[in-house]
Length: 137
Image 1 (tube, rainbow, N blue to C red):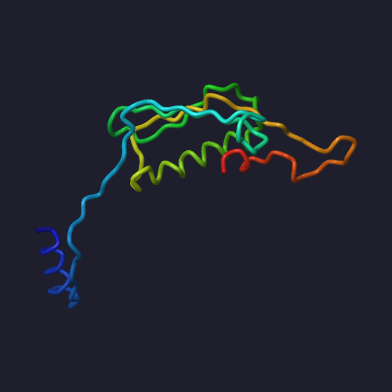
Image 2 (cartoon, rainbow, N blue to C red; image 1 turned 90 degrees about the horizontal axis):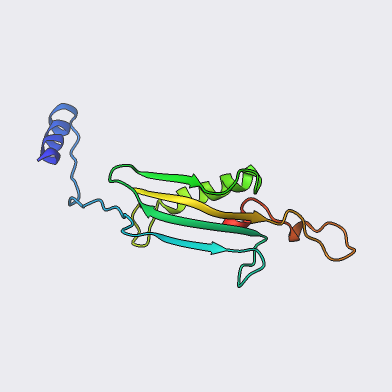
């Protein structure tokens, strides 16, 4: 009904002829349970020089999303924490089924990094160093 009113108003008052597409339902995704994952420095297939652990949990409906820390401030540089939070927020924009993930809490449970790496008796090699974006890509 609203589309018809808007269409008539645009035509009558502004001389603009418009058509509308079929109405579509906007969907969202909400977690129904808790999930967690940790990538530890130097373990398994983790190619990065950083540790990141995250847990996602359902939150009350209409609360959006929240990012929390369960790690000690100073365990990694603030740039790393910011990079992880930014990546979490960006990732929640498109969930498993392509819709925004809402009403959840994501908690950083583990953190760590190796600030500088180099070959034995070699000079500093930037390519072997952690950066804020490296451990969350």
